[in-house]
Image (tube, one colour):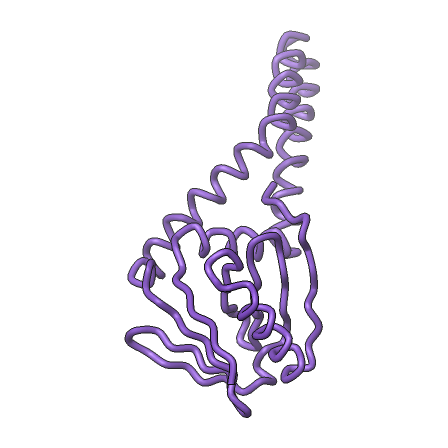
Length: 181
């Protein structure tokens, strides 16, 4: 039996949400389309207005299109972060700072929180991802368990992850250079 103990902060939940969204094909596609589609529409409108009203509109809308292409990544990063923070406060606010214990037994992965206990059979863990400061245990129901590396004793965590990979037969996907963009 191996166990680890830690508490999660708003920042821990935020990092997971940002990582998950950065891996989502739907969100990647949406952000890319918004980044390119809007400037293209500005340019088309500029060409139409150039023919009808004069060249100044093409020039002005071209500048707006270029500014959009340059500034949208910063705007998108800010709005996604802001929305995730609001959702995290609403959904997980009661869990901030509460001690969480995860135990590996012969048959189960047991997660204990102050007001609840969850028993998971090992096949429920379908993915283990490691980024710079976290492990994310992806579950079959599309949720995840967040394990902050810096809040857990290194040797306990190493023993825990070795036993977990052995029991689940899932290899650790390492994405140590990930950064929210």
